[in-house]
Image 1 (spheres, rainbow, N blue to C red):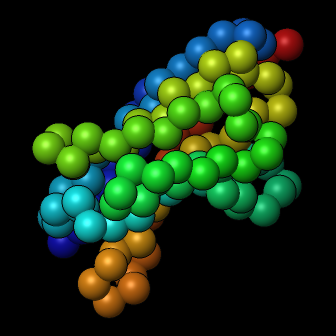
Image 2: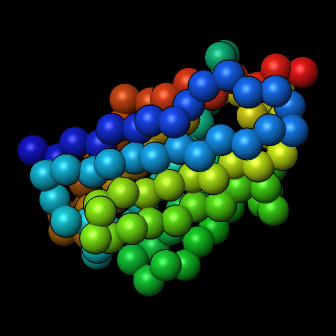
Length: 117
């Protein structure tokens, strides 16, 4: 059974930094694309960043230059380093694995990030 567990969220002041982690179990994800999404209260879930099996990353315009996604295939972990945080970054952050075998998506339970002004 594939499971994703996020951690690293918390309360931080504007301008601060956090690093989120997502540990994947039940599969070796070296061939899969990994994503970070976020959902703020009353808003739709949106994609923040992704990293492909080849290590190619892509970012939403709102976080480009401030956030960095990375993956450690040996540790089955994907990270999201968030710098220069803004109050509008406040949301529940989720990681997602898009399986290259079967096209199934797996989600974590989310971790809360709150940025105070």
